[in-house]
Length: 343
Image (cartoon, rainbow, N blue to C red; front, top):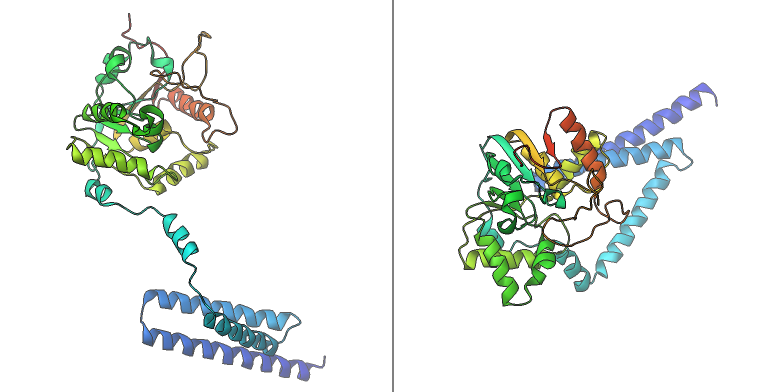
C-alpha cells in the first residue's frame, strides 16, 4: 500500500478510536454524576478497558470497527427483548439462597464480640489428638502441666485421664461429631450425654467450625440451643472458612501437598500464633505402632479409618511426615509413645 494511503487509513482508524473513547468517557461521567460510588468508577473503568480492546481487535483482525459497533447494536436489541420477557424463577432463587448459611438468632447470640484468644500468649501448649497411640502412654500428668491445652472433637477425657489428662482450655467440635458420637441426639439419653460433655468443659473455648463444611448446620443449631437453654459455661468461637483456605495455602506453599487439613493440623497452625513451645500428643496415622502392635484410630471408640484411602478428605501420613520433620528441627515436640515420666 502506498505510504500516503497507509497514513490516511491510520489517521482514520485513530480518529474512530478517539471518538469511541470520548463516548465512553462521557458515559463514565454520566454514571458518576448519577451515583458517585466507588463501584461505579471501577465498573466504568472496566467498561472502557473492554471497549478499547474491542476496537483493537477490529483494527488487527478482519472485522472493521463499524462491524463491531453493528454487532453491539444487535446485542443491545436482544438484551432489551430478553428483559421484556423476564420471569422470576422462584425455584432457582430459593436454591441459591439456601446454598448459603443464614446466621440464626442462637448462633448470633453466641458469636464472640472479640476473639477469646485476643492478646493471649502462653509459654507451652499441648495439642491432644485422638489416636489410640495415647492408650497406656501415661501422658495425662504431662499434658495437664502445660499452660494451654487444646483437644479435638469433644473427645472424652474422664475415663482416660491417666493417659490423656483432663485439663481443657480449647476443644473443637466438628458438626459430624454429633452424628458419630452422640447418635444425632435421637433420644433423651444421647442429649443428656452431650449435655454432660458440654458442662464438663467448664469455661473452655468451644471451637465450632460451623462455616467450614456443607451440611451440619442443623447439628450446630442443636448444640447452640443446648448451650443457651442450660446456660453452659463455655466461650464459643466460630472460625471463618477463610482460615481453612489460609492453613491449606500455608502448607502447600511449604511443599506439603495436603488435601484438606485435619483438625489437628489446623490446631497446630493456629497455636503457632500464641504459643512459645508446642507439644503434640495422640498424632499417629498408622494402624500399628513402632513395635508393630495394633493401634486404634481413636483411643475412645472402635471406629476404623483408611489412612491411605484416596477417598479420604485428609492426607494424614503426609501431615505426620511434615510434623515429624518439624520435631527433628526443634520447632515442636511430637510424642508418639510413653511419656518421659511413665513408669
